Image 1 (cartoon, one colour):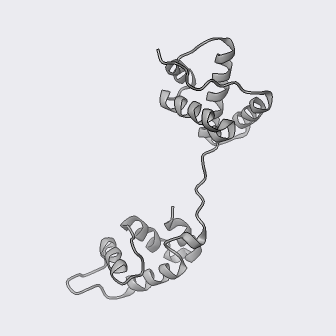
Image 2 (cartoon, helix red, strand yellow):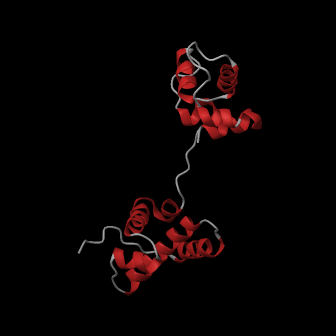
Image 3 (tube, rainbow, N blue to C red):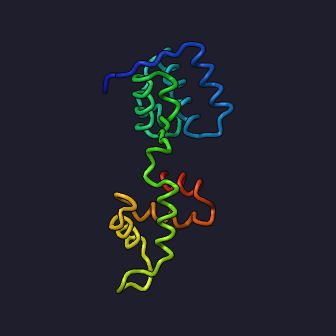
Length: 161
């Protein structure tokens, strides 16, 4: 049997936070992570339980239990519960308002000789060839084109997701 690498002992404040998440949160992943931490703390107080048994008891996988325990061991309750948010500033975005306008204008032009219409791959290649962007994939191109009628702000936000 594997040795327990991350021993979880919660203080009263952490337990209260986890109970609040369980009762108030609508995010199922947050609730599951909180339940895992509380159950692990309870087990550590009363005895031992394998990761597999705990996962079965909570209705999740052993990988999820191990991941949450490891996250707690590395950074505590907050780190284990809340997913790390990706921060992207407007200055680092590859697809900004100017690029979106250029892509839209390109999509309205006549396609190159030998093509009846623009394809996503063809638009991507042409954008790179014209120096509009250094690199763009068809899924991002699709998002930019689909959101054309919704305005540039929403298109820029969605294309970066």
